[in-house]
Length: 618
Image (tube, rainbow, N blue to C red; front, top):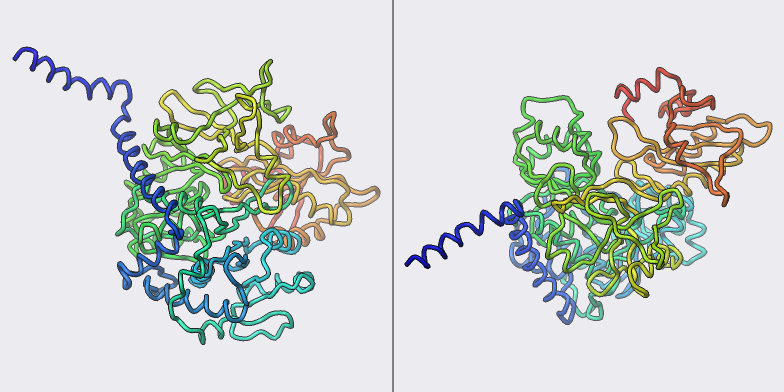
């Protein structure tokens, strides 16, 4: 009996010892079990022949609950069955009039609306690949992104017709068919599509149309900015779609939840973590054209929203709205996203109530990610023993001045110890592949780091500097390279500089991001060298950037310099310029500020103080 009591006493102490050694043991265990169950499902889907894709999952949801609301948009409700019917009509219209077939790529150039979902579902039912074009891009960028996908058809929102007309001659030379989502179109080279959709049959399409699609086949192209100056088309295959679609499952989203989706559907956050993940859960999506801070919570209350998505800036915008008596009167219980600062996180919870925030990390094309399933404020994720076993990653020492990893005497990279900042790498392999960028071998290879720890190994270079503390929590530190992030968008400095050089008075342009107090990320600034005997033409510069660059990429500050400082290899120096920022007291150079209603105006100390004090909102 004494031995039995001793054993029972010992067993009773085990939980205490586990808690002392790891206070997050139970949460780690729970998350690991969820991951195992998801892994079993994914293994089943990936091995099925023919492929069981996300569209097959959608069709199963149609059978399971046909009358359940799927999309709510501007006070109009579409059930799962109605969405299925509309996508059938789109598929048949495209098959008949656009002559597309399995394996073809079709570009989508429109903003958030139900038609976006119907068209994507239609293309997937036909076995086609959708290229999700950013509806803010224009001219050279638009043509580049379109050509990356090898699409011969582009479907365009009526309000974006003018943007496509600018490049229509080039599209016509390439034999591209342009369909406008309108009832009629008088422009030669463009065809209206809405009438054809309305007249098409709504009968289900045969699964045989996509019978040859595999788990490795391209599903969508999602575009990501880089340091090349033009967006890159990340090839997202059906495997990646499934992996991203489990994000809501891992975050605790239930089948009775209602998701508020305002993030653009051309982004991986809106499309994969939002739309396809909602299909996997079988939930209702409240779709909005774009974000509105003033209407956000009213919408959440009106539509009984329980799950929201965010990027860091969004949470700050919400916290900056005037306080109201009903700030905590809502049903939102879960917020999923990335990029929220620790101070904003705390302010958000204090003001809007007990909402579980699931911060996560990952890149559209990347092969490694993290989820902060614990909810520790400020962390973007947490290491987990199961995750570490399934996904090989490392933080290595990085020389920010030389812009290259530090290697030891044997030529291998050096791991950083716990608590120190390092460059995140993800090992490329069968479990964590890297598909790269469409028609861009150079940039694909550039993201690969070889001979990292042993001869012949290969890792994906995330470009992000992270830190992992002794409890396994992961924290974002900085991003290397020429790309900076503003308002949730990656801005490629080379692309912005190329556009500035088109302005007649500008000889050289050095673009970089500068920090602004109270704002996440960095806002665009450009140091300019003018052509000899020419003055800065603020009007022409403003007119050009407004016409050719989306708002988030337009340099908000201009600095005029007589000469540029360069490295020994003639690379433009950015670090000192970024540190000096836009403070008129930090330089004798002339500075200009982009006032949206007036264009570029001389920068003054009053403007600078108003920005840093938060009186002027950027």
